[in-house]
Length: 525
Figure 1: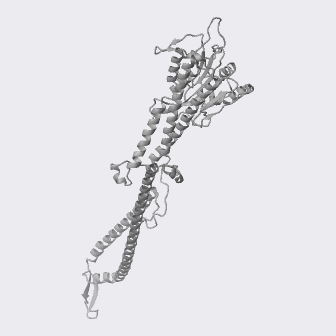
Figure 2: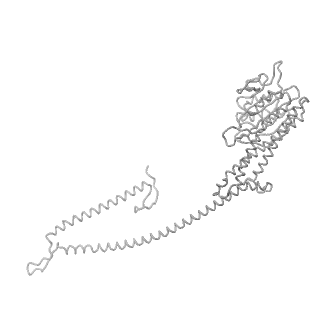
Figure 3: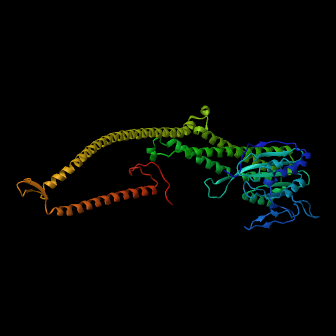
């Protein structure tokens, strides 16, 4: 149910002073922005027009009228018989929408028919709105200065749209002005449904219009109360579905294949079901009050003649049945409401003794299941968190061990490097001596005996092929030096290129061109 808001029914009897009629234009002006339309599209059963055939071939006594038409029932030609029942139907553009009547025409109807200002309390329940509010008035009003009564009766209908909830709550307002003299009975009806309008046409075509003023009330209330049984049955089915889940669900999620799945969504569903039951209870109680007040009103007025006593008893019996049905629906909704009062956190624990143990167990079971599941999930989370922390500690310990191993390896490599450096220095120191020994031990320098006795016995003489040694070694030395310089230059170029690539990637390399990331640079476009 979602097309009209609900408030507590208010059934009061107001002694309307006609001086308050002067305030009607001011009250209408205050609500006309959200209540009335720019163009009227009302229906009447004006005596000047005969009944017409509708598109479905049915007879209709209600005809469309607008601002330009002569105001209904203001006067008749000589010889014309005035209707015993004069009706004005004012539809809505849509639920929670404006009434299809202008403020000017509605004010004129109020003035010419001298409608009691209390009817504006009911009219104010209509108009543009976006959600349920306190403007809605479900209940009864009557005037002590004249035979007038009005009420706003709630009812439910299937909206026919593809929605999850097939039902919508509606409201229909009715104003009735009756008199014991020759004046006709006057009616104003707001937001009449299609089915109710069909029954209204049948009523106008029958002889009941000449019988008693209670007949139309009995017809309308009976028509508006027919869908409550089906609606309450749907609420009961929805409640039983949640009841089965609460009774047969399993705490262990691994065993849900053998039971029902229960989630927090089920608690939300029951919360919305609780709201529907509350709104329906208020509406049904208002219907009970309307039916009882209607019977009381006409018993007090006692304007029915003895000739209509049979019809009077029949109409009273119909309204009595309506009141009994609404009272029975109210009791059914109260039972449903009691079964929903144990929903998890929506019910105070102190109220549990007021409910039956089965009801408390049924709906607390769902909360307990969810609580136990949350505890199991929390325990599993804590256990897995502990396992993860232990794994991180183990990884940290392994990292420390690896770091110590790397430190030892670094120390060993550093010691070896120092040893190799010493060996290199020693080799460099002995390199000239090795070169000299190699040269003197070769045939490039020879000992030659002296030619005269007075000369030294031997002397060192360069071999005639010594130039071959120089011609071979010097180019090889130059080639080796050139290769060394080339390789060194190539290594430097690769190092510079690596730094440029790292800068393009947004990473600044350390001085040693190693993978030490000291910052992030913006990438090139």
